[in-house]
Amino acid sequence: MCIFVGLATCLIYNMHYMKRFFVFLAAAALTVACASPEKMAKLAENVKVECQPAVLEVVAGSIDATVNVTYPKDYFNPNVVVEVTPVLVYQGGEAAMKPFKYQGEKVRNNYKVVSKDGQKVTEKIHFDYVEGMEKSYLELRGKVIAGSKSINLPTRKVADGANTTYMLVKNAGNVSFKADNYQEVISSTTEGQIKYLVNSAEVRGSELKGNSVKEFLAALDKIAQDERTTVKSTEIVAYASPEGSVDKNNKLSDNRSKSATKAWDKVTKGYEAVDPTVRSVGEDWEGFQQLVSQSNLEDKDLILRVLSMYSDPAVRENEIRNMSQVYTALKGEVLPELRRARLIANVEFKNYSNEELLDLLENNESLLDEEALLRVASLVRKPAQKEEIFKKAINKFNSERAKFNLAALYLNQGKDEKAQAGLNELNANDPDVINAKGVLALHKQDYTAAETAFRKAGTDDAKANLGIVLIETGRYDEAAQVLKDVDGCCNNTVLAYILTDQLDKAKATVHCRDPRVHYLKAIISAREGDAEGVKTNLENAFKNKAFKERAATDIEFAGYTL
Image (cartoon, rainbow, N blue to C red; front, side, top):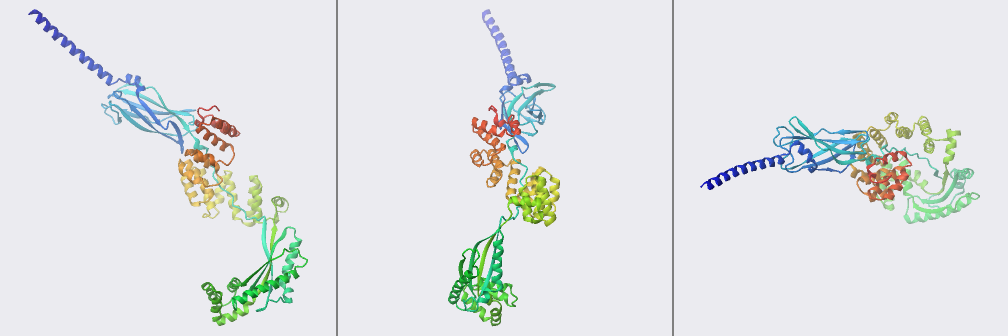
């Protein structure tokens, strides 16, 4: 009996002991599940952190990224607050964002709640770019707060930065000078006429001695004496007045062309005139219309309407004949002028060469007209010389183009106030003026006003400048689309293709050669893993020391020995 009593007592004692043991295990498990602030710091490596993009990029002056933090199950203590501060560490300093704050499920506050069962939180990261951030890294600095107690979490580096490739944009803006209309060769014609009697193809002697032929021959004499002037070709064109049958008039015109050719041979004997091309036009309705429109005939508008209404020459003539009074006037004033053959010399005058223009600028400036002054301004290199020539064209000819070119010169020199004053005096609806004002806005980084101006102007310069705005404001796809068909902006077109990862198009577009383009080609090589291409292109780019300094901190070349 005692044995059984002893066994019972023993079992009761052991059950009491086991109960206490299980309570202890439960408490221990609870301690693990609800980690202390110290333990959260020790287990911080179990927290998963991802950043998109992993390599930070500057876009339109800003660095933006998305950070995802995944807290594992049983990590986040329900009674704590966690502060996470994104910090961008760069050469010369660091920038910190306002901390993100998270709270456990039992904390009574207004922060984002993180469950002890585990949770993923996503935050947007933003920094305004400052110089030096091209070599930087993003880290998260955190601390756990439990009441008055605060424990620092291990600092986590989450991204490298920052890519500033878009800043290679050439952003001064394109403002081209208005072109001159200077002609290296000036073409003109000189001519005389032989008049015929009605229904006749005979050349009268009085016609060969008349003023028209005399003046034509005098012009040939003058051309022969001027070494700058040359007769390039000659023509004989014969006509008939539009009266009578078409067949008869065509034949009459043919005969006049033959008689005029014989007359040509006679009057130009001794001249170095080129053999003429001979044409027979037939009825001269074009000349008829011209003479009627220039005449003082009372019913000329009616006649011109008849000409426009009927294409058949016979119908035209019949309708005009029906207007008896009109036809009588035409017979006396217009039709005799159309019975003719024209003797034509096509002449070329060789204008001053570039060297001669520069000499005239120095020694005989009075011979330079507006077009010559605008041309010579394009020949000199020094801005001060251009400015002086533009001012002469303005003072002498009140040249609107010279006024614009002077403003453009100031703009390209960075003298924006002078440029603005000059542009304000010009036609505000001129597309070139609109574009130039857009460049002024571009210089002030007023991209909204600049874009409005460039889209309104619509010139090639404006399209190139619009591409600049689109790159500066991070709209790379649209920039590539706008710039692909614009000549004269190779740098920015290649850059736009790089920024949109169209490397094949970028390589195909390179047709200019300067250090900036070589630098862009080095970036293409780096992105393609071509170490030799990086080396070769950077050697050419380093002819400009600024690119050597940039390359030293450019994340595009991370992993390459420069």
